[in-house]
Length: 474
Image 1 (cartoon, rainbow, N blue to C red):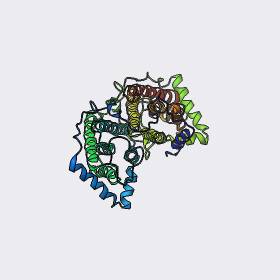
Image 2 (image 1 turned 120 degrees about the vertical axis):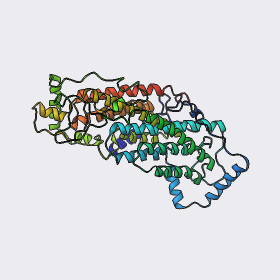
Image 3 (image 1 turned 120 degrees about the horizontal axis):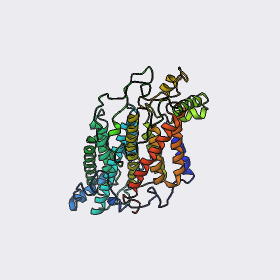
Image 4 (image 1 turned 30 degrees about the vertical axis):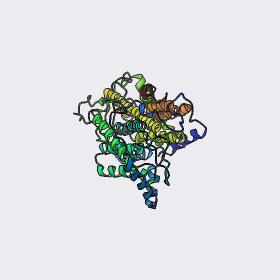
């Protein structure tokens, strides 16, 4: 599923599209990040909000150093495997992969999935920024004189940012996916944290402090999540069940997906309605009929390439969904650019905040207008009573396109983070939007073009916030 986007991203990187310039937030940074602990946080009031006690000194510190020497002499293949698994770059990768994996195996709910990606990424970012604040407050030197499986890194050792990431991500993922055993997420966090000790890269107190810090950050993020309105239940209120308004595809009985998602609390937007587009073409109008005919004509003459594009961007059940696809692309760029831990955490937080806000904005439009999908309109208008689209029609209104909104937002944020690849990102966003026409499940101008424009506005708002978070001047 991801092969095409990943291949495109790798090709772009191979052509030198990852920039080292200072005109974006994703420039390659070698060495330490002494100012990362001053960057603006999302949920914490400041990087110092959660107190971290001083690291041990004297005999307690000596005992920790002796423990590292002892563990270095008792490494097993299983331990080396765990160190490799949790030592991937960027340090956020194992947790992004886990989030994608769970979404892929779950129900298809685009706004719910983008909400979860954002909560996890924000928790990781705030935990990293907080960890870096305390790193430079205490300035504890990393272990030395012991055989290591992973390099300690150029920044101070206490608290461990890897452990902070594990504590934050594991606890938020347990909240986002309550059907999964919470104890298993805790086990993964403990293993991720201890892998740094087994590797000789951190002292035990480094990872214990990092875990505690990350979990406290997660608790703050979860408190925000519990108040974002996502637990509200739809009472069934909707426009009349007439052809002028969306209805499920003939033969289906599926209820609409997350009809109240457009009311959820946003991260950067003032509300989901901030950039609400004007009404779509009225049912039965000349413009509406022309768009319906366009869908039919395009689908009658699809090339194999167009079918492949529709299939790739379908992002339906059994995939990481639209926001997840852009996380996978971002990971390729982050690895190619060798982003350090703070900048990788920031990149994914910015991406996923934009995706979450785009999802809310798109769903606000969908369930404000309840605009019909092509399959119903084409049949009801008598254009082709037996017409079927290439792809299955999702169970929610069409205006505006979710794929287009998500892609427009992602392209703007990634163009800021990796400015030399901007043309590639925007081309991919346009391809994702047009894929919905090829799939026969969206009108192009009213659904796709309007969705791209909405997503672009969301992305621009997130970039404006990013330019003021302190990272560009670090």
